[in-house]
Length: 309
Ligand SMILES: CC(C)(COP(=O)(O)OP(=O)(O)OC[C@H]1O[C@@H](n2cnc3c(N)ncnc32)[C@H](O)[C@@H]1OP(=O)(O)O)[C@@H](O)C(=O)NCCC(=O)NCCS
Image (cartoon, rainbow, N blue to C red; front, side, top):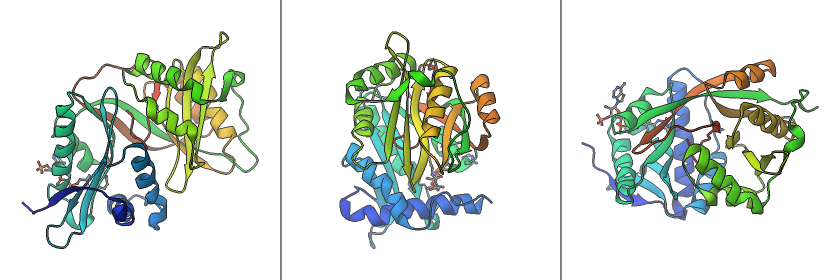
C-alpha cells in the first residue's frame, strides 16, 4: 500500500487544496465523458476552504506524500449536535485507486465513533468510485434526489406560485426555530450553519423562510451565489407546496443565473411543477448514513456546502 501521512489542513495549504478540489473533480467527470464541474481557476474552489474553515476550523484532513509533502488527498468534516457530516472528498488523479480515500474516510469515521455519532453525506449515483468507497465502509444509501437546474433570464422568472406572500427574508431571530424544524422533520440539528448563512459575512448567501397564517415557521431554503457554487439549499419544508413557494422566491431573486437544487425523487407533485417551469435533470444523488438513521418527514433539499443529507 502506498505510504501517506495524515495531517490537519493549515491556512498555507488552502491554494493547493483548492487546486486539488478542481483538478480531482473535473478529471473524474471528464474521464467519464461529462463536463467539468468547476472553473479551471482555483479561486472558485477556494470557497470550500473559506466556508468550511470559518464554520469548522481545523476540520479538514489531508493525506500528504511522506517525502515531498505534496497533498495527495483532502476531506472536510463537520461535527454537529446530532451527527458528523462529511464534506467534499478528493484524491489527486495521479493517486486514484490507491486506498487514499479509504484512509481519509477512516480518520473521520473513527472521530465520529468516539463521539458516538452517525456520519452523513451526499454522494453521486453516477460516481461508482465514491458510491463504493462509502458503501464498502459501512454507509447505507437512504434517500435519492434529482439534481435539477433552472435558468433564470435577465428579465426574471415568469412563473407564479401561491404561498409566495408567506415567504420572507430570514433574520437571526429565526435560527432556533429553523434548527427545531429540521430536528423535528429530519432528526438532525445544526444551528450554527443557519446562523452563519444569515450573518452572510461573504455576501453570497440568501436565506428565506416560509411562515404559515399564524406566523409559525414551516420551511426555509438557503441559496448560495458564487462561481464555486450556484445552488439552492439546504432547505427543509413541511410540504411540497411550501417548497415550490420557497424555490420560486429564490429564483425571482436570481436573475441571469442558473441554479441547481436537489429534490427528493418521491416528491412527484413538486417535480412535475419544476418540469413545467423548464427544469432539467443534471445528476442523481443519494444521502448516505453510517450509523443511526430515522426517515425524514416533509421535504428535504440537501446541498454540498456544508453537506447536509
Ligand atoms: C471518489 C474518490 C475520492 C475515491 O478516491 P480513491 O483514493 O481513488 O479511492 P480508494 O482507492 O481509497 O477507495 C475506493 C474503494 O472503493 C472500492 N471500489 C471502487 N470501485 C468499486 C466498484 N465498482 N465496486 C466495488 N468496490 C469498488 C475500491 O476497491 C476501494 O476499496 P479498497 O481500498 O477497500 O479496495 C476519487 O475517485 C476522487 O477524488 N474522485 C473525484 C472527486 C469525487 O468524486 N469525490 C467524491 C465526492 S463525495
